[in-house]
Image (cartoon, rainbow, N blue to C red; front, top):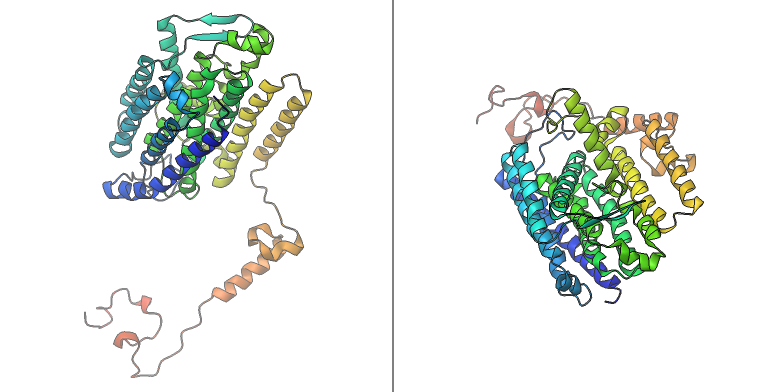
Length: 444
């Protein structure tokens, strides 16, 4: 195969376009069928918002796979591997369950069972973990049952990790987009850097997942016009898990040893994708951390691990005083730092500059966390070009007084007796003073 950079770009653009164009009609459909649940105690939005955004994202997934199947270079992924079909089968099942949950609020155990069944469907079609390269030990071959159980566990954990962070507008879609972008770079490097075509399916899945998230984000950014719901969060979680399983369990480190200069170096080169063994924390560290903390918190309180609450990381950022948009951007920052830092470390693990850069950016992230009420101030020469909240205090107060004076209504002028107002009503003041025109003597 040649290097299908243009074909990846075309697949990405088609996925983005289809997802973006479908989201508007899906929003109207969700409103028509009543998929607009009432505000719950743990919600941060103030108005009922339609769900079912996963319908548009599933359409983008199908469009991306269809286009890739008809491209010269990417077509080889479908000819040499059954993984794209396995992904589509599992995604269709989990998406259907998510749509039903967005409309009818299914029980948590039912959704958990559906997640395990979707993972089993992918396992039956060959998308499973065959072996694991363990640093310091080498390649560990897994039995069929071990590989299947580990695959199902990884799928369930990833789906719920993504579902748990879906609490703010644009948060889950943005974080998964960042993770998939880093994963795409990693898979593309293994494919063309080492010439291993077994990494091609994971690279394709990551590119399509990026397109699904990018196409949905314009509709989901604060204030969101539509939510992805469980039909979307479980779907993108499953696609991310499929990418991980494909590159973790299908790429043989012994093959990489031919290019990396030995098995030890090969295992070290693949380190960011295999720590820990149950999930690549270097890619989805923030969602997994939120998942683990939620389980510990709820179990400590004697609640079910699936019981919803307002203790997630994004909720805590809001409690610290961060605005909605700033909390989302902070989560983006940490996700990008961990994901792309791991990819950079896998490329040049001996470079001290990478470690220093990651440490410096981590310090910057901590400063942002500790200054929740910091508001940047524009220079005095640019204050007229920015909103009042970005100006200095005295100038902002003067601007607020001027705006209040400009918007203050004029006092009502007295009207001579016998002069009729609008529609035959005698206006002594604003018409809103009469809440019911029948009480004011007007006929109806």
